[in-house]
Image (cartoon, rainbow, N blue to C red):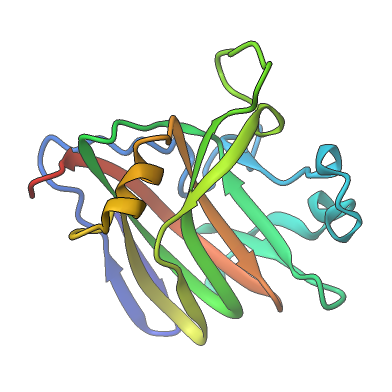
Amino acid sequence: MMRSGFGVLFLLVIPAGAENLLPNGSFDDVSEPLSGWNTDYAWSRNTWYADNRERVEVVQNEQGRNRVAKLTSGSDQGSKLESNPIPFDPGARYRCTLDVKGGEYRIYFAGYKWKPRVQPQDPPALASLRPVYKSKQMTGKSGSWKQVTLEIPAKNLSPQARQHVEQIKFITVYVWMMRTGYIDNVTVTRTPADR
């Protein structure tokens, strides 16, 4: 998949046989542009994010060729966008690659397990899950498009970190923007952990 922005060309290569586990990572679903993503956090009762879904939208990029997710923040709480939960196998490694512009941003894999006394459902709702782990965060800000990559689990985990990873049942790609920013071309692939 190719995209250009501000004269920079990105070429996203998914390894042969690797499937993108994240549907609509390029926000190309015309009928539901944010299909596969969570923007509504009213259930969390966190007043900072009560109107979060009103600050996230899909727009055309600068050249009008690609659709990108735009996160706008009108105050100091920032805005966030999170993928739907992806089933997690602790014996595998997951890699996320995405294009980002703007910010300041914070991007990471969030690891979840079922909340106590919750009847598991398919697909899982974020409100039914409890966070148990955060991967290494990619942070920064950029005036032009930049590609970032993150992995879970990291190599050479401490025994304590390994215990937390083994609790994970689902992961999400978590994107937070302090100031207006954009993301596009989000892919999540799975490989054996020893690679």
